[in-house]
Length: 232
Image 1 (cartoon, rainbow, N blue to C red):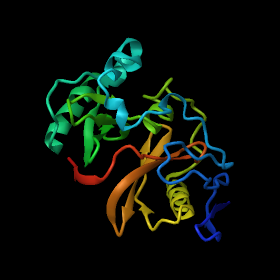
Image 2 (tube, one colour):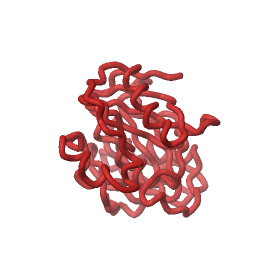
Image 3 (tube, helix red, strand yellow):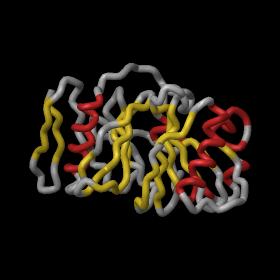
Image 4 (cartoon, rainbow, N blue to C red):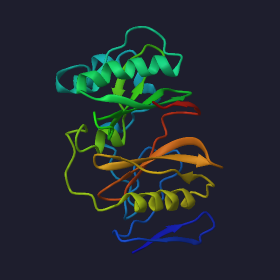
């Protein structure tokens, strides 16, 4: 299989693998809409318009604050979250409700991010911690829309056709098509998708995800500037 992508100067970027061809589409850098293999932006669904403004005061009493959707939401405790340890504590309070544990925690200028793992250490889902008041939610984007175990409505089980190595190639082609020098890190395998750090000269700048069935790419544009990471 040859993966085609158009670089910033119009030249083709190709990689070789054994999954269906995936072409990096025209979605501009900074868009939160996933890019589909046929270059047509996929519908963003309930994530449309969700971003840093999701932390508005009215949000917690809306869709995510009642019914089964409440399983994706831990109400604010009113305390500011300033450190990675504090973010880990809040993420742990949320993870305990799902029988999960907290792995990597990252600090960005707009929010804290945490990886939730199963008891055996396998990535399960991803959450955001609001630095203003400690509210915790399942991360919008891939964790909501693609996660086949914890997503909405608990995903579609079409099978994994994109192995981890090919997901990294897809991510690299997607970045190159946007005329950027960023490179992808190693994929973390979540149910139904992969999440990869984006790197500049080996240092983290952000992250993106690749759908394990379709090869769609979803850039995590909502974090802001990367600050620090805590691993345990």
